[in-house]
Length: 128
Image 1 (tube, rainbow, N blue to C red):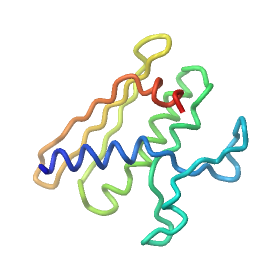
Image 2: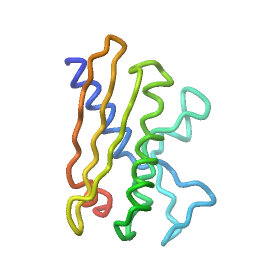
Image 3: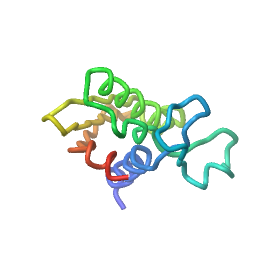
Image 4: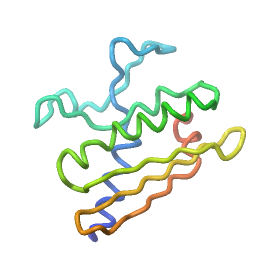
């Protein structure tokens, strides 16, 4: 498998595996979700996934887009912490009344970049 394919897979898993909600997160139904593997991490404190799912049932506003960007950046922070890439840049944009797109730009140590586009993440978030 190519490096590009591996990076694409890592980003997709990081963004669209649902991370367990914190005790202070507001939930509609009390379900904190979370990947079962986080209960036995190989490195203490490591968690997989994002909190993008917490945006369910929210209206797409500038605050919601800001939160989506923050959740995505948090989910991908491990890539720079573990020196997989030197930088991760996330952009989130509203495309329509019910459509949000997310773009991730990964910068590698040799200066090469990989841009990944995730279209209509709003449908993914609300399909849970």
